[in-house]
Image (cartoon, rainbow, N blue to C red):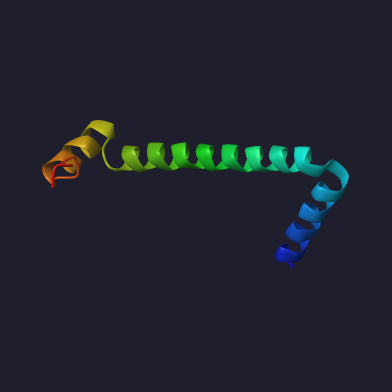
Length: 68
């Protein structure tokens, strides 16, 4: 059902708004994904003990060693 609704919205955007509507839709999707990324990073690092703890743990296990 959701696939049908999404496909109908896409068809409507393409027919009524053309490329301009598609660009606005893609920009909104990108903004939503970026906001989600920031929220996940903030919540995840706070649950792990803060950003300093995350970076110290990553350094200890060699995540910042790019010379391998």
